[in-house]
Length: 282
Ligand code: PAF
Image 1 (cartoon, rainbow, N blue to C red):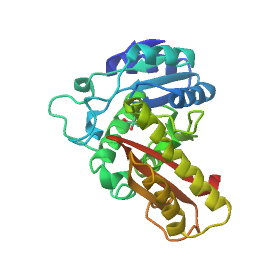
Image 2 (image 1 turned 90 degrees about the vertical axis):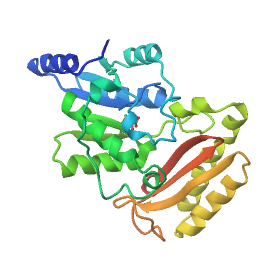
Image 3 (image 1 turned 60 degrees about the vertical axis):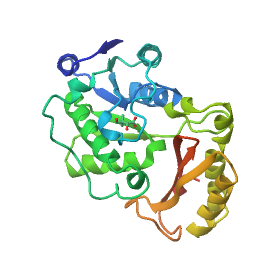
């Protein structure tokens, strides 16, 4: 396993693999890897001959008041995890390598991005689409792996790949949770002890919503209302959104009468965490 810093190095390695007829998987990450990322690397290792893990905190997807500077980084830890899970390369460029002076081309989307995280993070998906397109152009993988925790991101990337005829299979992998239910996230490291306990309100709300759907509740107001009540009872938590949307359009719906995504974003202190479930999976 090696860490490479430049686009030229990744390209030349991938070219050698291609010359040997090997397939290539890409796991795009912002580093500070945890078991959620490990499950993506495992899936890529299972499906492909070689796996590239990109490890890049992408400045373009952070708003001015967001946590770009404090976002956790630990490349040595990441290297150990990638090696243990069978990854072959970590692509860990500096921002100047990805965005040269004068960089001025962007990939943006007019659908799917106007709801949920797109409302509270207006520049986020343009940054994600741009960097993921660049990573796809650099690595040219056969398959790319994304977690379902970022369900809207996964939908946006699938749509981009379809719109722009990118010849890449997008594989969505299940949410990985801590033993007590909290969805794994690099941002969990921001939480102090009290906040860590309070953060359980996210998974509790998700499990409550899932139970209501399982019991046959169809009204989105009833489901999200119960979830919000539970979140509001936690003094350290403040809901950004608790919504149920059509999986295909990401637009809010009133009744569970089609495949839907129930997604939440909650501030625990200053840390914004997300979680979700698909009604089809309950
Ligand atoms: O999900 C993430 O970690 C990021 O949004 C991604 C896909 C690596 C793009 O920077």
